[in-house]
Structure formats: C-alpha cells, structure tokens
Image (cartoon, rainbow, N blue to C red; front, top):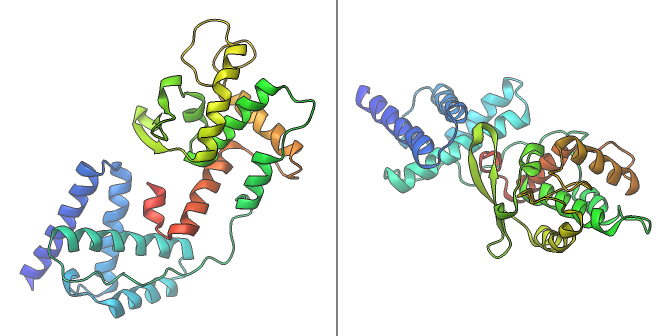
Length: 268
C-alpha cells in the first residue's frame, strides 16, 4: 500500500514539474492543479491513481456536486484530472485515461456580462457611421478585433509595438503580467483589420514611435482612451449596455470554451 501511495505521489510530482518547467505555468496555477489532484485522491478514498476507472471519476463528480460546489468549480477539477491523466498516459505508462468521455455539469446560466458571439459581431461590424473619421475607424476596428481574436488584456493591447504583430505568421507577441511574454494566435478578421490600419497609421504619426496604436497627437494610445473608444463603439452599435475591454477577453475565453470544453486549456 505504501508503495502505491509513493508511486502516486511521484506521478503527481512529475506532472507538477512538467507544468512548471515545460509549460511554464505560474506557481499559483500549479498549486491549483496540485489541490485538484489531492482532492481526487480524497474523493476516491486513496485508491491508486493508475487504477481509477470511469466509474471512480464519475463518483467523484457526484460527490463534488453533493458538496454544493458550482458547476464551474466541478468543471475546473475535472479538467485538472483529465490533464494529469493525459500526461500520465503519454509519459508514465498509465493504461487509460478514466476522464475521457466524461462531461462536466452544465452551469445554470451564463454570467450576465458575457457577450454572445452575435453581440460581438454586432459590436465589431455595426459601430461605424458615415460621419466617422476613416483613420480612427480603421484603428478602432483593429484594436477591438485584436481584443476579441486573441483574448488580450487592456494593458497588453495598449502596449503592443509594430514589431509585435506578425501578419505573415498570424500571431502576436504579448507582454503580460509580471513582464512575461507569450505568443498568441491572431484570427483572420483581426489580421485584415491590422493590415488595413497600418497605412492609416501614417496619417496620425507625428514623431517616430514603436507603438502600434496611436492617438490623434501621434503618441501611444492610453488604456483609458481605449476604454472610451470601446464604450463609444458599443453605443453606436446599439448594444444597449456598457462594454469594457475585459468583457471582450471574457467573450474570447467563453466562446473558445464552448467550442473545446477544456477549461484549464482555455484558462492558460
């Protein structure tokens, strides 16, 4: 029995090391995975992880639901367990992934401030008016398409430089929290919008600057200015609600999650 426990601990430790060293996840996120896996052992009465099967995982989900946890919390734990078993099957010789085929419980309803795909389309396509300045229109469309396409934070978008977006590769280098950089994919609509903005950018340029998005005075656009422009677009598009930049980041994550179902992957 002790050997089985030690084997399970070793497997979890190797997985956590993989998350930290190879996937470079934050210590906070790695700790969350560790808690979720420890909870799985408790829920299955310490049964060796390499011996768990689908009924064991299904029973663990039932126990979580009986603790009045939200559907989102249960989904997060199931996603953590699935990730561990995917690693263990590939690297550690585990015979099966008992999480495959299991779906998390559905949430009762979506959060009220999550924008639907149709609302995002209305925002991005329906905000222009004949009186709008073509230069500012091109700039704003590029900003908001990037927000939604790549799930950027407000500070990340405002901090983008010209060389950070690679139109040929369809990706952008983003500097996020803690000055960490990451590469994110950029969708076709956003790439087209950025390509349309770049020639217009020259019309606003006063002094040389590396900033991708600049204001009417030719300097880097501030995060506050981005917020005000987005709110203006939402009003012109007739959304009937205040829209702040983080809502587009949430919308990106929600819509990807609806397509993939892997909460942890979307979170990262």
